[in-house]
Image (cartoon, rainbow, N blue to C red; front, side, top):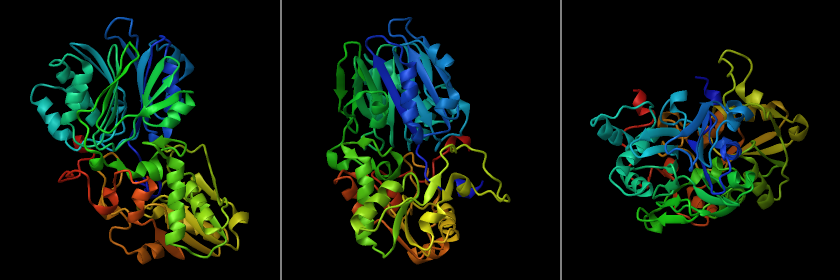
Length: 476
């Protein structure tokens, strides 16, 4: 594998569900919602819709590998008739990147159909899967989302409502999950008790939406109603009421949102649990300016995720903010990667330096994280080649020291540059003049004291992590 292109952190997925009580077809709205969530996953995507007034159990679905605008055409969207539906964009952390593992998953069972879209990672998926396998379940995929769907279907046979089945299934799951579930007549959203992954509710005219981020609501012209609480199961039924079940919720102090949503994953124009993502990133930059000051002529961000923190650093330090990099906006995450031996570097294909901007200057370069260090090292040398006099690297997160088990693709510890090196050694390896990371103590200040998970930085997880790395387990 060409490490220079996978030297970045990926998220697991984005989910979008809608129920239009005025009975308009929803497929194209889901498509635009997925378009807004594309940053959360670029490997595969899919849409499933149903007509709540049609035959119970008839679901039309379409999914494929690639970006939303590569998979869907106007023609295949127009064929999908239905007033309720769910959509999904995927990046795999558990389960291979194959069409079988694309979502939403559609399950036909005694009580009708379920379509499910899931963001997150379960740490007890293996046990849940074995329970099912020993009672005859046959699996079509290698993802934990199928385990969730089966458990919901099984619980539904013992309960009066689908939302109670979702709640009961959720109470068996350990780990991170934001779910959107479509049943023949209801749209249900569920969020894990720690609130690792975001989930919110929106409304447009007489249509209700449950989705990963508020930017998807903005894109389709919907208004934000509220966030789904960690541990909550919300149900939207034909009467247009939003019913809530909070029996799986934890005391507020035990919640643990993934801090990386605020540092990197979520789109800067989103708000997650009342916090502006853009503000939390500019705040990170300001903290870096206070804690790791350095004299320089220009502050620049590595696009796109480093830009808000660079603006925050510039504002707090009084050093001008500028543009040093031009990004090729047409390079998807799936582009044909250059061979190790070839002279085309993946970094150069994605980014180019504005020589005029950096020549003869002392540059502060801000990025959101360093994983293996290969990409950051290349970017530093590109700045030097363009004539930068000094390059000071500032990172708007602490050093990665531990893996994540909850849906963030952080590699094994041995592959993390910070695991066995001091800050000075990392600085030397990058070829920078100085290096500063955000202090761990600053993380809760980024989110106004919201309870967060910072396990990838400290090794302290909100729940007992698995004894072994369970990511991609089912292919072994």
